[in-house]
Image (spheres, rainbow, N blue to C red):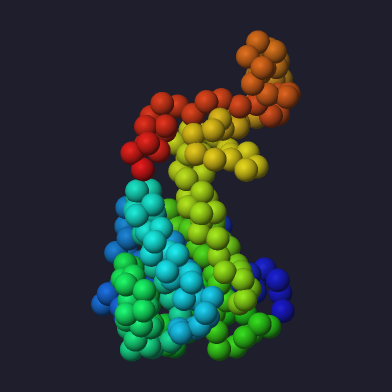
Length: 229
C-alpha cells in the first residue's frame, strides 16, 4: 500500500478540508459549522476501548485550552451514535466528566475514507488515531497519525495550534521545541543585499547564527493574542 495514501488518504497539507456532515452526540454537525474557528478533527478506533476512553477524557479536560485558542474539538469513529451516547454516558457515570464536544457516527465510513482515516494494512474496520488541524479558513494545516495502541499527547496538539497561530501572526517559523511567546525564526533573505544586511543585524543583536537562521521577538499583537488565549 502506498505510504502517502495510507497516511493522508486524499487529504494533504495546505488544501481545503473536504466538506462533510453527519449525526453526532450533539446532533447534526458539518464542517461548515466551524467556519471562522480552528478545528481539531480526530478519529478513534472504537467506543468502550481503553486507550480511546483515556483520550476522550483528556480532550475533554483540555477543551477550555482549545477554546481559548479559538479551536473546537470534533471526534469521529465508525461506531453508531447509540454506541457513542452509551459510551459518553458511561464515562460521565463513572468519572463525573461530561464529554464537551461532538463525536460523529460515521457508520458508512464515508468521512473516514475521505480523510484517509482507515488503513487496511492495520485494520479494515477501525479508524487509526488521526488528527487533522484545520484552520479558521478551512485549510488543513497539520496531519498526525498514531497507531491503534498509542494514545495521543494532547499538550503537543495544543502546542501545534499555538505554533501555527504564532507563525501566521508573526510571519515567521517556530524552532524545534518552541513554546508560546518564545522568539520566532525570521524568513531567510532572498537577495544578496538582504543577506549582507541580515548578517550585520546578527552581528549587532546576536539574534542568530548566520543569514539563514535568525530570530525575532514575536510582535506585541501576537503576544497579546496569546495572553488572551
